[in-house]
Length: 186
Image (cartoon, rainbow, N blue to C red; front, side):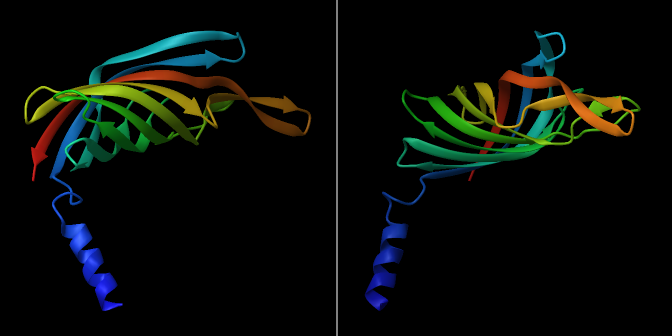
């Protein structure tokens, strides 16, 4: 048993397996997304060009090739707004250019009105993208997200004599985010 613990500690502390770099930072994002209007069967584009959404992030680089990042923050918008978190895995393919895949979970902050409102639900996304580390402290990323699972954004209320039911009037479509990344390496 003692040999197993010693081997595990040696394995975890070896320079090949221990993370090479740890960084903390903030990320500001601007984005555009499609809303699918289910009543009129159309798609509408919503663009927020100013980076109003903010996140705190932490990342660990492994083997100088892989990077794992977690971020949490708040997404600002009109009908698509609320806290969210993401987990991304990046691969250092070229010098300071990292293709990535990510999982994002968004908690939409809904409200209700007399005849409808915004859903208070969770929307999950899978994303692919690219990050460019322009300097040691600053970088950019561009990520394309596809929603999976629940996609409802807005609803209206239908009244049938004694029965009231929610009818989805719009659903979340694909989304593209441009991130401005500020890092501090530890």
